[in-house]
Image 1 (cartoon, one colour):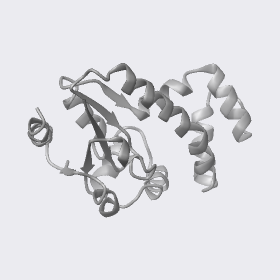
Image 2 (cartoon, helix red, strand yellow; image 1 turned 60 degrees about the vertical axis):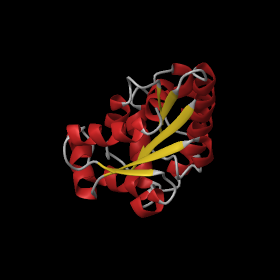
Image 3 (cartoon, helix red, strand yellow; image 1 turned 135 degrees about the vertical axis):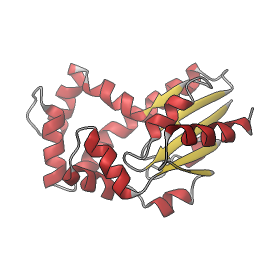
Image 4 (cartoon, one colour; image 1 turned 45 degrees about the horizontal axis):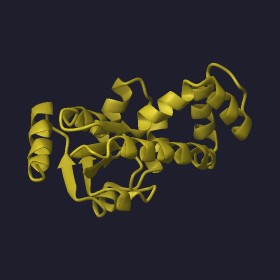
Length: 187
């Protein structure tokens, strides 16, 4: 079994890369785990209490507002969510331990110091202005993009910890060709 980490900066194309690998093996998405957590009433109640914010159906939007106002709030949020995501990673690995490849899409892989967990790490890279454009297209705004982007390491720093750097600034076919060429080396 090869554990392959896929990381990259905000809106660089990590999810697109993961979809390309879907036929090669199961995909773990840290973002999907977080979405799943927020869909659970018990978790929303717990996080509201821990973060001392109003328990409401607009919890995610309240959290985004808090992140924009208070820079330390993001750290508090990570201390709650990251251990839960790591537990799910372990469960996922155990479930698919007999597969040839298992993929892990983790935006903060390097920032969370998870490099030792993977056999191969791929860094999906794109220029900042292109990433901002993609982020806005998905309904985000520039202020939130800048706030979240500052929480991530620079591309240069992330790339030092990765086995492959894949530039995702052209089109889907080029990205697919580059990613599948890398995987072919391990088949």
